[in-house]
Length: 137
Image (cartoon, rainbow, N blue to C red; front, side, top):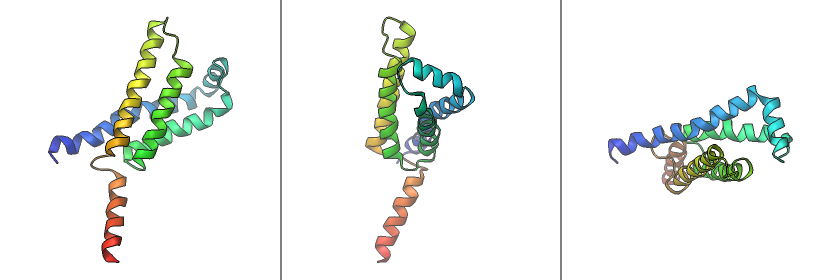
């Protein structure tokens, strides 16, 4: 694996996951207004704790490269669902851009699903441990 491949994997994980961590933290600090917005869009505001958990927890998991494939798959689905529920007003240029941003992020997350976390990931450590245990038996 070349140096650029080795370094691009963890940098890519950080770049794609940071938006989720920041969005989740903003939802915590603006909890009431976010909950009200969700209710106004027809999404139960009671789901907000789960959204925050997915965004912050999932984002940190992707950054660390822990359970990367299943977490990335869940976050890709969340991104598509969010695009459909909150950004489907294509008459508004800004909303359409937000829709496409969510779809593009989902595409990047699906690359993680397909190719794994790459270098410097906790998933690699657990895979190496499983391999060492299998060899020892």
